[in-house]
Length: 416
Image (cartoon, rainbow, N blue to C red; front, side):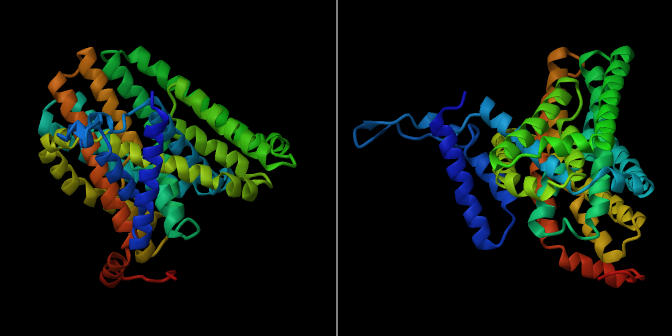
């Protein structure tokens, strides 16, 4: 368990690097990740520090911040609140009205990136199950990090937000099925019955959420019809965390569940109030999530998988950019805004780390050789770290890429 001092050091560190990032005009996300890595047992915990200063005994080896239950839960809440806010911007009617474009963009994204990831995995491991896990790690973009960047950069209200968010929705729904299959293969030794049961439960729960969003607007209205801010916050947090927790218990992505809850609330007249009251809470736990990514990153283990990480970054950054650009075009965007879509989709994050934990479980269960499981886990963490920094940086400095794409491609009609 985390003690109060550790939690205080974590939040103070996050606040300090956030201030530095703001002063430098940079995205806070890479700074949060890096300070998490520095504060971890893998960096501070490995330093050979003195045990005594001026006659005062100090246990420096315990100064690192542990990956405690509090930090893990805080990181999970960060994902939940980020996707809840994403749902607030994307109601169900809008989602269904654009289902053709979302289907096209999402299918393009899958058909380009999943096989690319499988090829990288097969190249290094020569086996189907490890390649299948690497394919999932490479395929799925980070809903949490991309949503945070969209908000920070002010892109959330722009035309390019629609294909980005639409593709993320497609990915998040597909990854719920993928995780059910992967868990059955890794933990159940390939038991098709277990896989079918997991997929059935996931789809049934998602169907219930869709029905609740479509027909539950009066209930959502009554829930938030209160005269005090305190009750609005408590009811919103209680609703989204309860549904997300139930989803996770049933093997469904908590992020997908939170997204649907956000869509349900978006149909009410309380959206602005909920956004204003919960925005600070979202930002606090989002910061914990990015800090946690750094905290679980062992630089030494990542260094051992550097070759695989380098090949994957070089091979799959262009494939994600290509599928993102084509996704933007599927929404009838011009080259400039499609280029923004391409850059945004390169970021990987939370789901890739979940797949990494499956690989570790496979090593314990014996379905994957332990050395392979460890390498996949190290690869996933390093790959997420690199792509989180690369993706957020590309989004922040998108202007030169937009200009190059616009100059090289015809058809700037419709661009602002």
